Image 1 (cartoon, rainbow, N blue to C red):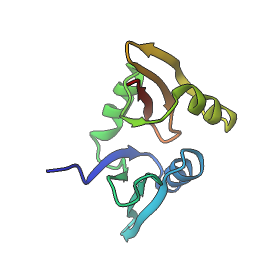
Image 2 (image 1 turned 180 degrees about the vertical axis):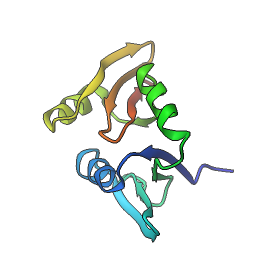
Image 3 (image 1 turned 30 degrees about the vertical axis):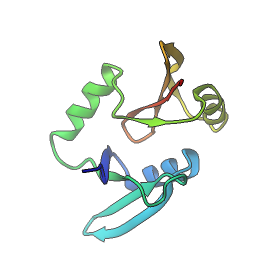
Image 4 (image 1 turned 90 degrees about the vertical axis):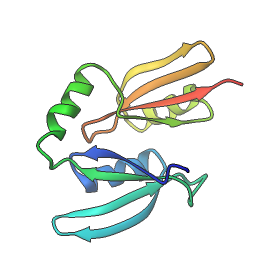
Length: 129
């Protein structure tokens, strides 16, 4: 068994697509119209046939309070692996990304947390070893 698909709820799919591709560097994978919304996925350029991230619309009534509670408590919706948190932090800050947590060493793991502009906090992380 393996993870094929995971998702983040986004406030605006078009804005999310721009952020996740143009800023974070993911590649578009699927873009299928589904009424007012789309089945919109992105993948890592390092693994284009790997796990897809669904940029899922936040339309369900339970989503808004859930996302707001996570953000209020500083809890990331998901985590992405990077080779160097400090370098990625500097690259993304240079592109205007707002971080809620600067790079922090936590034993063998370094993390930072950013705002994805679509209602989520996203952690970037690297594990030494």
